[in-house]
Image (cartoon, rainbow, N blue to C red):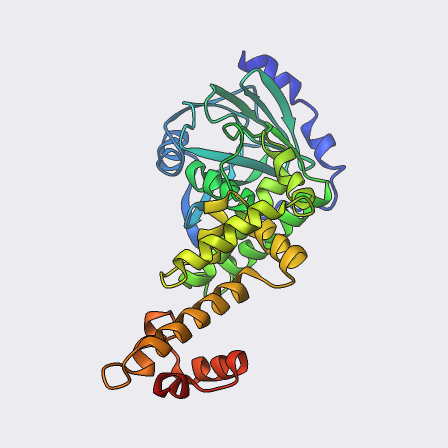
Length: 349
């Protein structure tokens, strides 16, 4: 089986030469895991990052070179550079808990996954089915940038984008056309991250890592066709179809729970809308935003409590804090703008 695969990949050098924009340049050099001609050592080091797999030479390589493997992680996203330097056959166990997007920087690879067969080159990335058997043959000049994504994190990001669970479990297409605008945008983000990681300091600030992780996941869901693509595309249409009854439910929820540490995300989830749809619904039907509506409900609640309280037993600052206003000065300004008097005047009456 390895020989036909090697034959299918014959002529790789001539084909790869047509992709003149791709330079055979090692990346992520500050995160080296292995640089060795020992395939057993390479299999062990690569398996530590991904999963156990079989690795064996396939066909005849004219110029065998050392295996180069560099790898690092940003939360739920991992970036790796891998080049075997000789034609090899790779047979991993099913990936299971993670998704791989394998992007050739040069050369070609034959990837068989879940009944699909992909000849992958710099214009076609492979996205193996994490539940299926995987059988790959990489040509000797095949260098790849590999993106490893935690499946649970990707599914959670999809739910955040939709504002609800998808209609069916997430399944990704097994190939990605890297020439589409969505894919190019995603690849540009990866290149930005790669350049930062290859820089003198590297991308190590926790806040930046979290932002980078969410951006990579969101753009991946836009770039790779999948089982919820139509749902994601429908979000824009959904925002123009928000019915007043749903908005009334959101209004009532805010009124009933304004004193609690309620967020707009909480409201959207409770009424079954994405945050974007909730915001658009409030704009269209109430000419305001959920955040402004929640703040106003809290101001009204604070005013009611101030009017009912004994001024000798309570303070403006305590009432303000009870209603989620922890900056007394800003509370006083917003209160006066809303009611035409200061909170202390309401309390003293």
